[in-house]
Image (tube, rainbow, N blue to C red; front, side):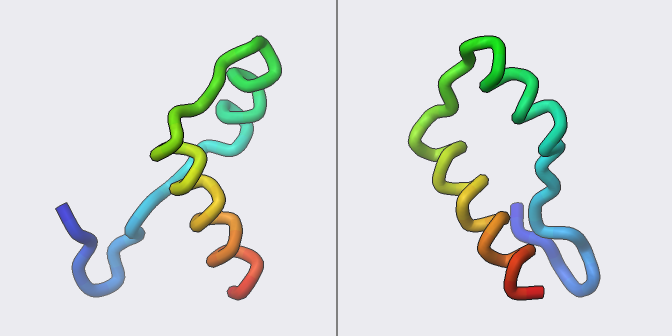
Length: 45
């Protein structure tokens, strides 16, 4: 589904991402791409 209007397109819980990668979880290629895109958009805003 795509976000409409003022809806948030994607929310990443960075604290949880940091925790899980810290205990050895490896994000899939798709998740890694989405995290990178989200970080770039946050830096641009």
